[in-house]
Amino acid sequence: MYAVTTGSHSNSGNHAFTVFHHFHLLNVQEIHVSFVGQHIQLIGSSQDTVLAVFTHSKDLTQELCRTLLKLVILEDVGAHPLLQQNLMSLSLDWKSNVPNLLLDSGFKVTSNFKRALADLLYIIHGNMGVVGSLSLAEIRPLVYTSVRVENSPHFDKDAVCQLLLTDTHVCLLQGEGVFHPAPQGSSLVPVQTQFRDIKVRRRSDVRCVLVKKRDTCMVLDIIFTRVVLKDTETDTCFNKGSAQHTTLSDQKTLIGSWILTFGSTTDAQLVLNHLSC
Image (cartoon, rainbow, N blue to C red; front, side):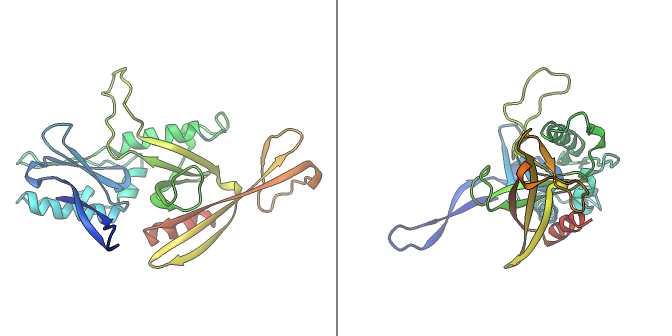
């Protein structure tokens, strides 16, 4: 397997492919499917031999896994959940049971959805700003997918991030491609966090969503409105249809938006449907 990038020749200005890494498939002993299948890790005989391949698509991840298995092994793997079922549903459901695929040759396809979900909800809960009014157990994740953020000052321009939608909040974050959790019961702290650059907004702050079509992608412009009282500087959510009254002299309105490009039209439609409820 070759990882390539494009570069331009300074003289002609033409683009050319350059190989910056290669990984021999015979050295692969494990395929680890990440949370909601946004990337996979190809793992060799040691922890130092790891190649993270970002697909940003649960469907493309499964297609890539099936293709790699055909090339590496000759066994019939059957209809395993990691290869056939909806990875978003499996990852976001506490009750789902996803066994690892262990083959006679020693090759395996693994996942760790429940641990990743626990870590994700724990860090999201800590960034909600409503600790005490919403318990960790009450967070209900609905959608998790990759998006390209076009206008956020918190991320690099056109950065690819992950969008988490719950029944009460909408969140942006970035997941690490190679993450080594500390062993269970250990006091060691991982070198890097699994999720970083967390941005959380309340769904009740969503004023409207503008939908655009760009090439084959769907773009959602999520516009937020929040009313901030001048005298207390306390954020008060502006709810559509609310009977609460405040005068213009007592408040100021802050308007911001997230312009998100979705690689999956299905995921974009799912987010839009939830936000329209």
